[in-house]
Image (cartoon, rainbow, N blue to C red; front, side):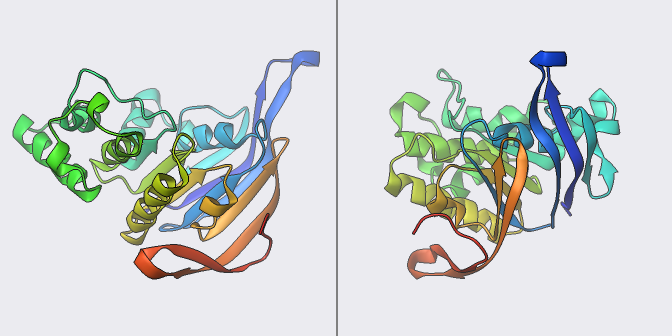
Length: 247
């Protein structure tokens, strides 16, 4: 299960005249197994909201509930356990360790797992296989393309099969063809049961999601519920949309 609910979330930086409200009284309800995209201009609060959902950024006020539990009422160790067991993070800049092989990079989230090295290696191989890179497991990040590096980052995020996958501009540094490949991969993971929450600037990629949340100046200003159909090659397309930006 991975039901995520935000209730009256506010995030303020600074105080007095210097105060900045990055997130302004946002509430949302993401059902288990949903694919939700968060859109908005730079500075709209997208990444701040995602970091709150990821238990990385304590809100000034409000609640974040995951399966009914208030994440920010957990102790530090419990919250770290929650991130390790329930969340997978995919970043725009990959954050791969250059001197580690792809398999070793993927194994990093398993460092504190109380199991043998052989089991961890098997889990890393399975994750790399899911993103189509098992044959390159012993290469270094510098020996593969940018798109492949992002796939390694996704493998690292899913190595312990977390129920929630959070992606912050996962296609931001990629060309359109490679970006579409990454989106199909995220879609497939969602089809397998993962709850996916993705921040993106791209309307085209946002349309892979079943729902879009639009932020402006830290506020949730619009929400789009859509019907998703699969086209040739498994590519998703939005057949109905209550609001859509662009063509």
